[in-house]
Image 1 (spheres, rainbow, N blue to C red):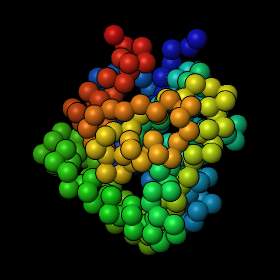
Image 2 (image 1 turned 30 degrees about the vertical axis):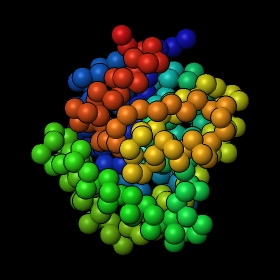
Image 3 (image 1 turned 60 degrees about the horizontal axis):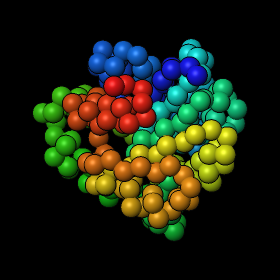
Image 4 (image 1 turned 90 degrees about the vertical axis):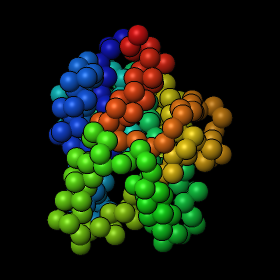
Amino acid sequence: MNNQIDFFLGLGQGSWSVKWLSKRLPTITFHAAPHYLHSKNNAAFEENALDWVERAYAKTEPGIVIAESQAAPAVVAAIKAGRITLPSRLILLQPLGLNYGSFGKTKRERFESLMRRSRLFWLHKNQALFIPGNFVTFISIAIDTIMFKRNLKAALIFAANQNIVHDVEMLAQRLPIDIYACTRDSLFPYDELRSRLSPDLGLRTIEGTHLNRATPKGLNQLKTILHEIGTIK
């Protein structure tokens, strides 16, 4: 089995995050996601995300794929559509799209829920801007938001209405899938995912909150997962 690991980063984790993480985990290939705001409508949002996954994965050999947060729906969709070669294993870390039903019954309710959850995320002490990595991520998102503010609401509605439960359950019949969710994640908490997913899916809990990956705590959390799946000692 190929030991190649491709890690698709969540929103706001740009080139600086890729360099920071690659220096500390050189055996993993990290990919920075395009911002949803760079597109004008739902079809463009989806195609932009799928194209990113396809282009990034084309440069590596099929192996283990890890997708976190907002990257999870794009990676799942790319595998389902055959846009990338089937990986040997898929790991979803704090993924968007698996607690869709907990966000509300309408598009507006789900949008408002995402806004509330996002505010709690940014107000948490783990997102303090003096922590290495957080400021860079915050600035990256702020710049994109200002540049593409006309697309902001449409992009967030698109994100809030991602539902990948069925697709993940179908893919689980074709390849091993592990899902990691945090106990105190304001966005995609473990208890919500557990109540929405089939018991047959490999849902695992990790302590803590939703984290920017290119931070000391984000790195340690990732190392814990890599150790658990047997890719590092």
